[in-house]
Length: 231
Ligand SMILES: [Zn+2]
Image (tube, rainbow, N blue to C red; front, top):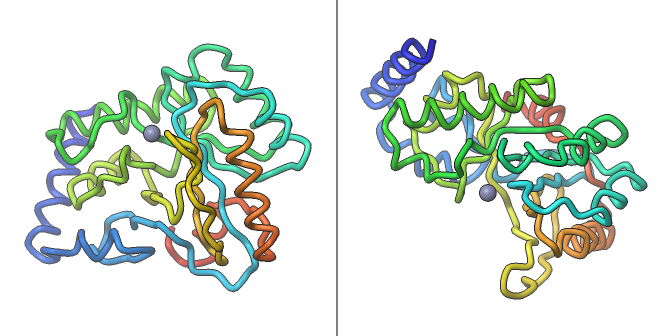
């Protein structure tokens, strides 16, 4: 099965290399369809609605306070989960899906820089994660967050062969790593990046407060990607 996907990805990649060399740089700049036939790389969603998008990555820390905020305020959120991080206490995530407004999306199996892998490696990471998440959550992810935001046309072609409709990066990272980042002024269509770390509840609250100050409401990503003609 994976062989045909790798061949398809290689073919798409070759055709693009002939016709659209240099498209990758432009594609990473924002929402764009450069690289015809490949899924777009989206860091901001063009929209006239007063909405923004919350995404949470990885999944290692299952903070009950963050879950409470997401459930009580019914916050739409895309969770880009590593299968390993969702393999224990899976109920933490199924509750966010079933009782909240969370959707599980693809973040690879082992969190590599996909641009460094050969075709079989990309296939194993992206298709493999999709299959594992489907087995646990009953839905094949349609969006991919490439680890470190590292993408090129070969990654996009591999993602397409795994059924990915769009590669989603981010506008602002609100995660408190060594220190809390300055809070930006959010605009409609911005994509906020958070992580399942011990500071998730506080980081999420800062994002919600910044959005409220800008008159924005959190919204589900896929319907707005469709409305913008990106998927
Ligand atoms: Zn990650």
